[in-house]
Length: 288
Image 1 (cartoon, rainbow, N blue to C red):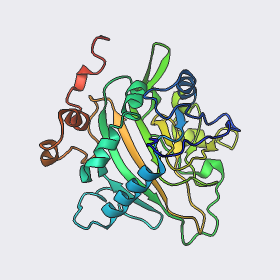
Image 2 (tube, rainbow, N blue to C red):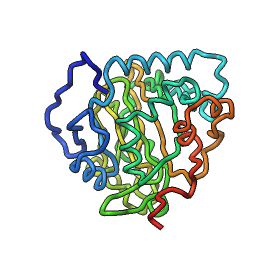
Image 3 (cartoon, rainbow, N blue to C red):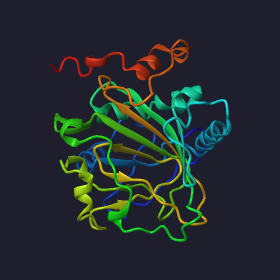
Image 4 (spheres, helix red, strand yellow):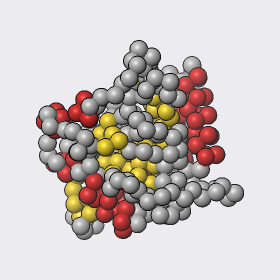
């Protein structure tokens, strides 16, 4: 979000067709060109959504959570490795992280691409580090750590000429993604009813790309899209991201992500609805 006193960044037109620039950082919806790009490609990169000051604040919260030994759930299911720290369930840890999940420039866009009200399925910081034992992590496109969260044939639908994914993520980049440090995507794979391992058999640089992004940018990504995280080169700085995953409210909660009762007792009604998805099959009521 651009805050008073912050300079509004101006970016040149994209050199590749894989990125579309956000035309107005104050919007709460995708512009027609952005929505079309998402429909076709399964993702869209929105530029300058969060200010440098807000990115610094979120990094400080990540470092605080990482150092807090009293936070027992942060690595539950996600043990630390030499190249990745996952700080899971971060919206439980600090109220600002729950508020950010409901940011007026984030949640309305998410609800549009999911197709209705959502439940906060996943919320975590990702901190990537270079592999100290690998001099050059460069891999062919087919050898990246490709994955998707849900299959297109049951995880998505079309309505009024638009694509909707029942499990969609917002990747908020808190540090610059320099060359070789961006998220990998296979544009258009969100529509392909093909297992990831089958695609890897013929995947090459003509089908995949690695996105360039700056701190404050947000990647809106369908979890039906085949994608991969980066492997950082030796000497690279830590790469901080804040990731929110949103699902249709009738979908079952991921492993041990049910919000604790003590949290639900102190949040607002709107926050409780986001955390629990209590409307369940009220999703898209009036459409059936």
